[in-house]
Length: 227
Ligand code: NI
Ligand code: MN
Image 1 (cartoon, rainbow, N blue to C red):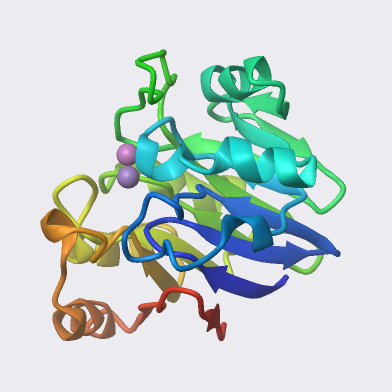
Image 2: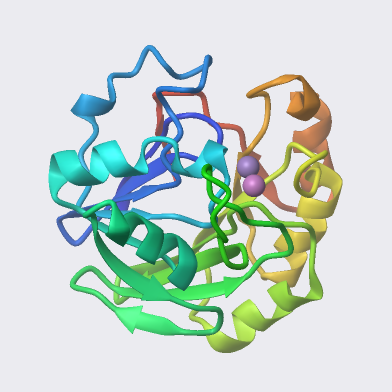
């Protein structure tokens, strides 16, 4: 598992066993990221946490460019299926082993509706593992006690990607508690600074994690993250 790259908001890509996994692509409609040409983005799988626009805007284009498989909850995955994307539907608590590793769709506390008003099911996150490691991509979520199930049901996490921007998701204070719930010391923050409601104080956010003996990495757009 290497080459974790941040493309703004909640968009990340990572290489796992020679496959490129892309999360929640929202690039062309993100003022902070639209200097990145989505036609240069590679993906074998596009994992989508929920149906909101700031997580699905570039799913169809990138999935079709790469003949990638869209993995999400049943409602979101089949919505992309109707747009002739390849897809694999999951639902909460379920896992499936792909050629790069096992993907478990886990609970999030958040809403989910697709851009055309279609039912986006219930929002979720992903835990992904293989013999090389394990990580958690939380999607958009509040702090929830369900996060305590992750260490009970999944391998030990090497790192986790958590939303920290507040207003629409948990803020960094609650995210630092989430890091305890999931028993993970290395957190990559996302869903911050994209627009006014979710601008954060970087130093205060890092300090909140340091106080708990945790590391918060605040990635910059377009950069590789040194894990
Ligand atoms: Ni959302
Ligand atoms: Mn969002």
